[in-house]
Image (cartoon, rainbow, N blue to C red; front, side):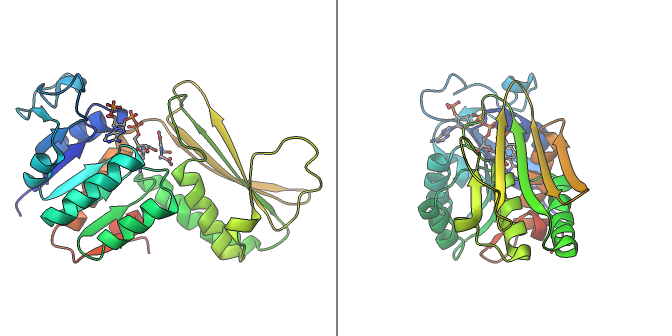
Length: 268
Ligand SMILES: NC(=O)C1=CN([C@@H]2O[C@H](COP(=O)(O)OP(=O)(O)OC[C@H]3O[C@@H](n4cnc5c(N)ncnc54)[C@H](OP(=O)(O)O)[C@@H]3O)[C@@H](O)[C@H]2O)C=CC1
Ligand SMILES: O=C(O)C1=N[C@H](C(=O)O)C[C@H](O)C1
């Protein structure tokens, strides 16, 4: 099988660098292009420079040129950048792996629309462990049922700009579905002041930001006389990047559609 040619967006970012490294280590992947925003200090430099390696691929600034050179574009940037890139991929008939988080409803709808024409993996967390935790949460929530208050607690580095994390929100969606809750009405994001007695039909989200924490997620099921905590802690960003390469390989030859990491990992 020919390697999947990937273009990496935001190649100078924290995840962009990891993605370049993971692409170089994966025999099923060929690094075809890497690009950044116009004006970036990285333009014209080797894509391996941010990680002290040499790739022979120069960092560009034109998404069209980069996407045209690849089978699949991998995007861990910001929602505004992602939707623009999805339009380019749609026009050129290329697949997209999206790790970016923090989309609003309109941006999400645009991605869903594009997925009618091209194959897209959209996943707030590409680490295998987190996707297994998603499955554990389904089981735990179904077994525990009512009688346990559910809280989602996440911690990330000081530079993360969206909150709660995309992973925490996905955990909330899974728990709400299994428990029959309406997340729009029954979620609470942080608490302050005289908030009153906690309703049983509620999912609480708490966000911690500080230092260089890569990413921790805990779901707490608090009962009477006991509590259960399911925790995932990331010690490195590499599992996210390795997952993104798996997603790019998964998309090769796939029909248009919106997939997530559970599809990629066979966890459905
Ligand atoms: N799904 C997953 O497994 C994971 C998802 N993430 C998500 O990935 C995203 C990026 O995280 P991280 O790498 O830490 O962030 P960084 O800020 O380190 O990197 C973001 C990159 O995107 C670029 N960028 C920002 N805005 C735009 C735009 N409008 N158009 C194009 N490029 C843009 C930045 O360029 P510049 O430097 O010029 O601003 C930078 O290179 C976040 O949404 C995060 O939540 C993170 C880890 C795992
Ligand atoms: O910004 C990050 O760093 C991360 N973002 C993702 C999220 O919002 O869930 C995934 C991971 O937690 C790291």
